[in-house]
Figure 1 (cartoon, rainbow, N blue to C red):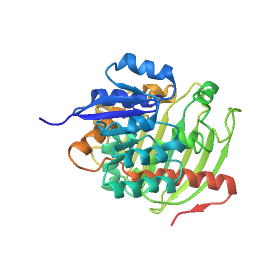
Figure 2 (figure 1 turned 30 degrees about the horizontal axis):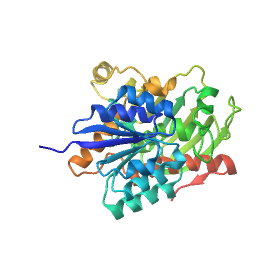
Figure 3 (figure 1 turned 135 degrees about the horizontal axis):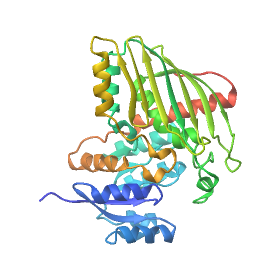
Length: 348
């Protein structure tokens, strides 16, 4: 009989989505949860009464029955807790961003190589239904030469969101940034995943409507790609009450627009252009993205947890490993460097 993997989660904010994923996963069960806040532990206990409760992370890691740990604490702590788990013999899934600097993510990669254990990162938007056909169309050259685009995050987060849980969000030390590092990093990941290597970035940032943060709540950046494409990247948490995430990719033979997880334009030159667009729009109607207003509505974590479980069960790499996870973080930090220095930042 196949062994059921014992799954643990540390950090019961967004970690509750990981708990749900572990409880629903094939080949695993939610075995333990850890948090410093008793109220969160009790909420988890009500939903998952069979899971062990811990307030001490080291004590939880000492449990030899645990196979996988999801790290869902403030972003600036990700590497420390992930490395502890690896050294304790546990496979690890790390919330986005995997950490707030490339060097810290590469520290995780170093320990992964030393231990031979699995490490996965959370970029679940790659699994939005429309992303597979969109990436295929781009990779196969159906859009011709891509020369322009727009990647825009128009979300809202109120003051209570930033002040909650020890006020770590919107700080450089623990969040590594503001609207772009925390909310927009998913869209940055999609941007580089779809369009390839970045050549340079010129950016501006501002705090427009959040006195309680030290980072930024608005980003406007021009991103040049090694392919020659030039796109606009914007991210904000000021769009009250919240709108959506727009992705637009424009090429010499085709154009694709996506709103949330729903395509709104799919025009690729050819004799069946209108028929193909109708087929795509009908097949991938989606429901947009609800995360612009309420991050607890995100359900893509269940896929990421299942992917992590399957990576261990079938001895394969998770969908997003540490080196892949560095790409979006490198871009985000280049945006901040450009805004801070006023200079265009060039990539190798």
